[in-house]
Structure formats: structure tokens, C-alpha cells
Image (cartoon, rainbow over all chains, first blue to last red; front, side, top):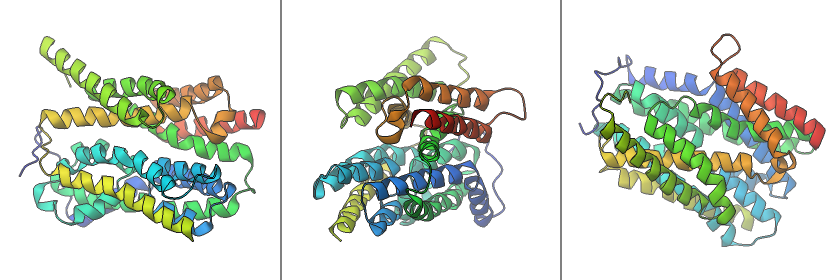
Length: 250
Length: 109
């Protein structure tokens, strides 16, 4: 057993199936609504830039990463051509590498089978946020079925959301589309308030400052720069704090 | 038709990062310092992306002035952490923030 929790451990679910069902229920609240709304917004955007219906829907099912999909639609809009578009979209997905590194190690070794490669596709911003928030509260053996529960729901609402947005585009008033577009960043900002460990909170603040600033300097390296510099800074500060104060609660 | 192939190419490129994450995660332990560090990096990255979308948006959101975007955010945040029920939490916050944004859109679009 490579992943062991420091706390005595939460009560496990009766069966993997029960953990899966619980995951489904968790996702059916705010996460599904926010993702669905975001994908309706993306569907409307892709229609307005002249993407075909099938490319739009396929991008939600197969790419399943809203920032990359939006980059793609915007590049189609300005007439960028060929593989450059795909490359730009794929580059915005570099964040998935560290995101996987924070989720997978929390899955116990006996569950780390080929299934992880299926699980990998279901990791997006929303499902990652649910995973890092709920995994520490779950018994290790429940984490993978629980993940599949909410991960599949999050993924499944995206395709119909995109199709609906595409077909409704032009019929939805601008202010409503605006609210749909705004829901996604809003959801993440609000979920940040639930992050407890001090180091992670510092990282969020550092990233929040560095993200826009680095984007002004270089849009293409903004994510990597704000992550590496902001995250390392937060980590260093947290280490120093732990060394100086003995009874740090986090 | 080419467009659909480009989507598939982007999908493969995106999945490659996810798969790479699975491959590299094998040696990472949750109680290691590396895990703490990479978690900090990930949080900073996600926060950076989200704040960039709000501060320097492209598309529809860019037509709303910065103060209005920040106001919508602030109202939602206050409701999220509001200590008294029933007007607190994720759903009320989301509803308040996006409703206020709709009003802003009415005025500015």
C-alpha cells in the first residue's frame, strides 16, 4: 500500500457501487450545472465562429477541456489554419500533467490498473476540483469508484450542453450567454474558498496575481510561469512557516 | 471535414498530457514533499487561469468593464462565505453572481 493517510481514516462505503453512486450524486449538483452551462456557452461560441456542428460536439466529447476548446474556436474565427490550431489547443492542456500527479497518487496501488487511462480522460478542471476536495475525506479504496461516478456525470453532460448551445445560438439574448460564460470562472473562484491547507491557499493567491500579470507578458507561457513560480513560492513560504512555528494547524 | 480531423488531432494532443500524468504518477507518494510542491504548482496554475479569464477576458466578457466583473465576483464570494443561513453557499453564490452579470450585460452589451 503506497498511499496511506495520516488520519485514522474515514468510514468506507459498503461497496464500490455505493461509492460510485455517491460520486454521481455529488456531481449532479452545482458541478453538472456549471459544466452544462459552460458547454452551452461554448456551443453558442463555436456556432458564431462558423465551426460545424459535429466538430463542436466532438470537441466536447473528445478534447473535454474548455480552455483548449475555446482557443480552438477563437483560432478558427481568425482564420488560423491547419495543425497550428490543434497544437495551440493541445498546449493549453499541459496543466493536465500536474493535475494528474495530484490525483492519481491518492488512488491505492491495487486500483492502479489500465483503468487509470480511462480515468485520465475524465479529469478536467471541474472533476479535478471535486477530486482534490473529496479524496482526503474518503477511504482510499472508495476513491476510484467515487471518481468514476462524478467524472462520468461531468463528462456526460458536456456533449448535450454543447449541442444545445450550438442549436440555440442566435436565439439566446446576449446577457444570458454572458452569464453562462461567467459561471465557469465564478465556480472555480468560489470553490477556492473551500481549500483549507495554508500552502495551497498561498498558491492560489500567488497564482491569482501572477496569472494575469504573466499573461500580459506572454500569453502562451502564462500558465506554466504562474504555476511554477507561484506554486514554488507558496511551497517555500509554507516550508519556512512550518519551520518557525511549531504548532501550525495545517 | 478537415475541421473534424483538427479536433481529433487536438483531442489526441490533450489526452497525451493526461496519459503522461498517469505514467509519471506511479512513483509519486502522497506523503512526499514532491506531492506537496506539485499540488501548490497545480493550485497556482488553476488560479492563474481563472483570474486571467476574469481580469483579461477575451470575447463576450471583455465588453463588461473590469469594475463590474469584479463586483459580480465580490458579491458571489461574500454570499459563498456568508456565515448566516439560508443565503450562503455555492448555489446561492453562483446564482447571485451570474444574475448580477446578466444585469451588467443588459446595460453594457
